[in-house]
View 1 (spheres, rainbow, N blue to C red):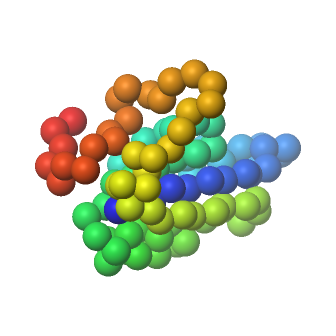
View 2: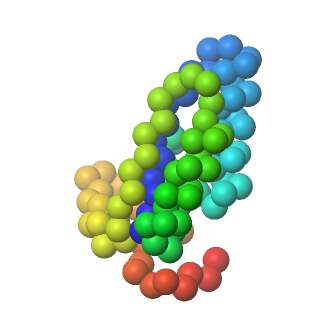
Length: 101
């Protein structure tokens, strides 16, 4: 399973930027990998683990902005087509359960 987070957070005020930075650091600290700006993904073992990740994310949401979460299987993730450029090579896109980073 893979949990994908899409967010659009305001950065107009200093307080907005603090919330943005905290949320982004939280994502990175929880093992999310940046796919592109404001799009992060994380591999989870199963649906239960995905639900836990989503529950924890809701506990760290900033007060303003939009955060969208999508849970997909690894097979669905592998089917992403790139129309321009190439995918990041360091993004894990295999179906193997054991991944050595």
